[in-house]
Image (cartoon, rainbow over all chains, first blue to last red; front, side, top):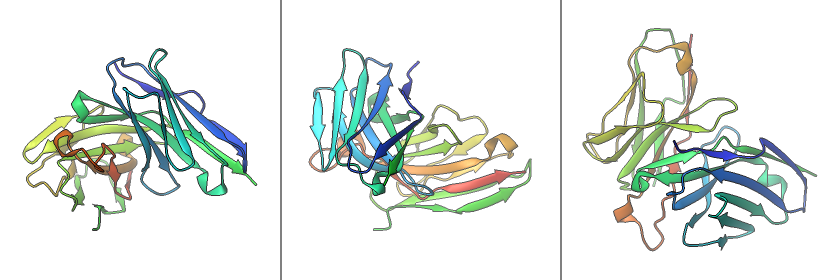
Length: 112
Length: 119
């Protein structure tokens, strides 16, 4: 079956440093991936997405990299700020977009 | 736009009781889904719907029923609550494949969550 997982449950970075959050997936047919940020007590919020026909996509201070060969994607956050402290989830679609399956999440701590 | 609205935000039930979590969206999204989130785990898909009148099971459907009589509403019913159903429940909606394009992505729009405790 499909699984979407994250390598590390927690990540601690210094304010101003870059953060890298990793994610592995198992379904070779997955073609659409999304990163979400969840702050305490709130629902997840969309950060950035990427399709399988791309290797890299950039947003504001965030970059997602996709390596289809090893079925791995990462979220890079530049100049990490205290407001970036949250749990980050990778997710992928299956069933033609009907279902979105989430990984377990990585909690990012930003040290001042 | 209100986005995705869930009610109630908090609920305490006794084992065996039934209840319905309400979810409504005003974005004309065809896709809607329910997730549960337990400590130390990600979001697990309970049920989803690709349009009015169409529902299907997700990863953890047992003990839950859904219906989709309108595009806007997607209630989740707990038939006979069990302590294992203590969790935070999130409703989400998104554009269908046919609705995407331009600025419309596959992004899930989530409600604020409903925290359910079953004693």
